[in-house]
Length: 231
Image (tube, rainbow, N blue to C red; front, top):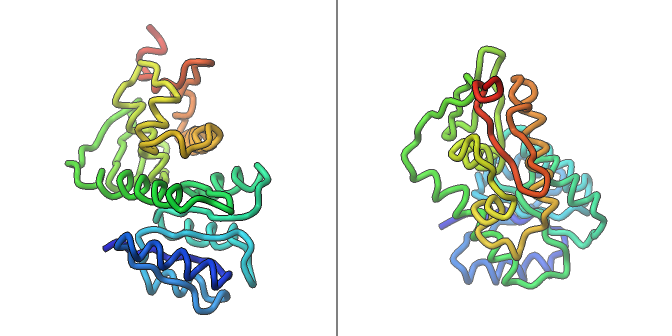
């Protein structure tokens, strides 16, 4: 049974969501003390975190940043705030998705199931270290390393990089990435993929690899092999 940590201070909404998710065989936990979110997160060890933005003490962005600094657990924002900057901020902080309130419960379930399929079912595949442009790509540890150093990616970023490397020197369309990453593109904003790609490229820049993720305007993205740049 997957464990979900629902960080929501609206008690009526919390218990409504908990009841519905429990019906889907999820084990749902809440926060007892909103000044001790990290301590409770550490004790529960959830498989996924669902978090509101507006919370007592500190907002959801603060707790997302704190959780992401110590864990790659999937994070899903659930908020009544509808400004595009809130979604962008959540993605930049490492969240996996964003749902605006009010929402249809089927959408929430679809997104949770997509996250679990992506994050946990892929872990059952044999782990193979890949090499790309002189770097080692370790999808089990979510690490990319070369002689310059090493970086840690979120699960979304690693998934995207793996898909691009698997078709290196070929254009992978945005639609293909969205379908393979979220399984059902009807529930995904196009901006979410852009934020994840930009964040991935920025991290790769620290290893001098960002230039090898090429944007093909109107077509998609390509992971180029280093030697092909000089052909």
